[in-house]
Image (spheres, rainbow, N blue to C red):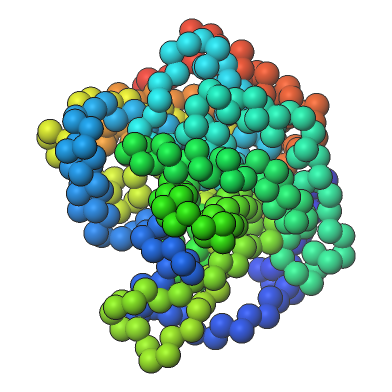
Length: 396
């Protein structure tokens, strides 16, 4: 039923039945905008300067800590099926060979998991609670007729409340501590105004607050991180977009006289990035020799990646839904193929796991407690087993 409601609202949106009034009338293309009070905490997935920035960051880290392995965890979207990834991580901890990742990335529900995964097994119980305790039940509540006048069938306030339950000062300080060791925590959103993915450095946001030392700056960092995580997991049409206030960076090229803050519209990171270790502008990049001492890329896909043959009903809504599902799976397979090629060039290994075809539980919007528990415990059993990882590039 929820899936059908989402599709109906998407159909209304496409036909112009929904209108969101915004005070912004022109997109500020000429200036570099950043969140108010936080500089250098994000970058566009299409920014051609990213390779140079990352290489400089890696060389600085190498000078401080020496050459190290570069183990990476990438977490995909999947809505309620994020319970699978949460279970895999808990089971992997139980198995005893889960590494401390140099970098953790996530989009959509993967973004919600990412801070817990980054902070390690000590946060496994909280992660389990988030996906199995029933706190996500509130996400299934429809907004009824209100959804016909504003975006989102489901209640975004419930999603924000869920994120706020776990993202607190203790978590932000823990993230800052690990960031200062040279580890990185990145999550992706989609900027609909710019029509591009945006990668957010949650570690740098946390570190800015920790260095400042004031209660006010910590409050701002917590609020911004919550906004980003909610935005990344806001499935279009299911949840309303998140409006993030940004301001022009001093000295940015082409900044107009008397520039004002601008509110950007951000939605699910999975719209532009099914998962990532690198933004799209870097998939042909090769890590320069001497920067890392080997490494392993682990990818947890919170859902199924292979095509699921079935009869598609001959009506507009079902065709739209089936098309979106097909697009998402195709993007994930294509991203995996590019990832394997990158890893081969950079002498890194790749392992990935996804829900198998024979598993029939769960679903994108199946937030009911019993359903999420079954998905979690399936992931847990797989994570604790010797059959966890696949290591062959997928066929496209």
